[in-house]
Picture 1: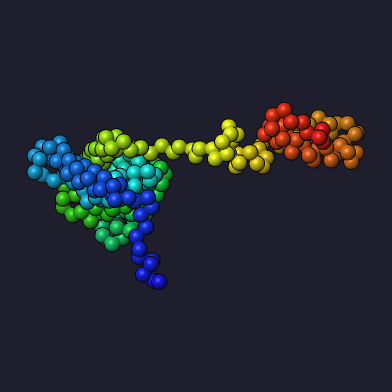
Picture 2: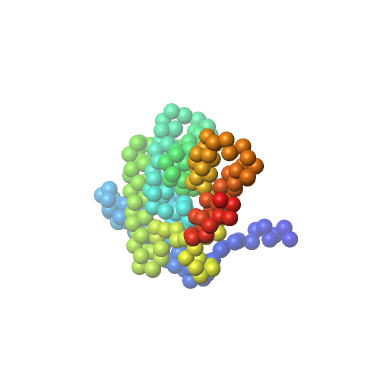
Length: 243
């Protein structure tokens, strides 16, 4: 029974989908490395690639509909987190403390910029623990190679998904009507809207100046005003029996 907790859950994961993900990741990671190396003049045999992009590729090709796998989270999340990591490494020299602070601030920065991307935490750690290889880049590190890698990976992902006829970037499509009519969904038809209450209050205010508002009949009618406004809105042409 306990071993069931370790059974992987791959919702909607067919063999074909996983093969496409593997092919896309293989091509894109290799090309990202080569193009980035050529961009800095290192030649095609220089693998200019930051480790967190392996995780970015998993999201981009295995779960492309995830909010965490969209273009802005990949480019913005990785680049912003790398900038946070470089800044923390500059001011906090204890690697243990710097690691925790960098990841925490990276999460905050990604949250505020709506670019939450899990590999961004790894990008911040890489900036802190990368050693001389990262320190040599300094504040250029978030741009080259991180932003460069991100942009190339996303561009290749867009091309791959377009060729494989997949929806990327993912656009949420509202669920089709299940009752075969043009009526709005039930969640939008039930209950009161602010305009229903406003209508009731307007009618109440109009009649409150007259002494008749103290009568039981008028109070009963006024208490039903929101229901009447909702009835007329949801069912055009229907009159309210109370008014």
